[in-house]
Image (tube, rainbow, N blue to C red; front, side):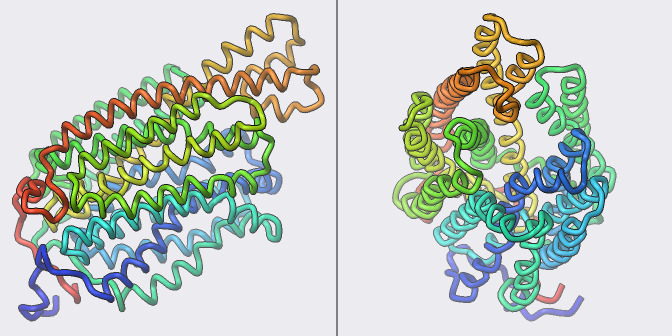
Length: 534
């Protein structure tokens, strides 16, 4: 390693303010962040064209959609720690190259198996990008107020990417083949590779041991069955396979934790959870994402299957909620400079409960779309707040050499929150739908039609002219009732979370204020040194 001067090895002062270079670097980091959000949703519109070309089985089609998320969830902890050890900018650039190359392979896949493999590798590459971008922000913005604002921008870029996915996908599919959805990554990767060495600092923990591959395997073995079990519950309900996967994931998680506690240089430092701020912020992120993701899927389905909007029109209608999240992600850190973050989070979540109440009143009529979008905009107001302030509290509570691990944990609980929300609240909506539609079926409907209608509203709409008169309207009303019940339950959960946030985070002072206590809760740092030529 090249010797560095004292100025090069000195850590950024907690009060040292970022300049133009750091803010330009944030713009560079925003690119892969938005790309990851885009990649989550852009494939939804491409799936029908993709299926017509590659002819995947139903199981293969599910793995085309799920392989990406599985691999991201499984490798987040490993990649967050790996970035701390080999260099965060280095890992970001390696991951970007892998993401770009694999995107091309995915775009020109000639079989379903080839595309599944490409999506899995994209997930591994995506797991390098997410914690690297967030950890680098913690290095670039030493001033806690600027760091909070920068993380707010970072969080909103991911949401913007998700919101833009259906719109971008719709525009591309009007002119090109389904593979064009993957090629969006190429210009982003090129810009990142050019700008990163110029604008982003390098950082690695100065003293760290070799990566413990047993811990890596245990983390994968713990996370993947748990995520699989949650997703299977969302699709098929409580089945022996999903329960077994969850139990296996829990047992392996326990084994992983015990090993980390014994290691001198663990993959995940369990002492991080000794910080009240760190643990409370993770709970807020987890439960908050459960509520949002549970209704997000239902709202997008309502717009297309009940209101009859095209995918592109539905994507455009999701613009106001996305803008509300951008607003919250930027304004919440500014408010938290004068008001304790716990109060800002609690207040935003209370406003979100009004959004859930609006969704609980949506009906199958001409006013349904406007009411649904208004309600979901308020829901996204709370999401933007917890994504910005919750993430900042998690990263800020960790010492500098553990920022990658802390960032990975932040992303991990959000991934888990999304999966749990879809599984739990999605299953509740399905239960209500089937309970209501079964009463209609009792009136006497052909067995083949009854099976289609009871399966889902998607299947009912696809059946088209095979349905008896008025049955589609009954199915739409049953689906809307499921949305109403789910929103009611989600609103109760979020209201409780608002109160928990106020209580559990009340010890954290205003950002940058004299009473900020989260900084005093940090795990004692190990010897570390930032570097520019690691």
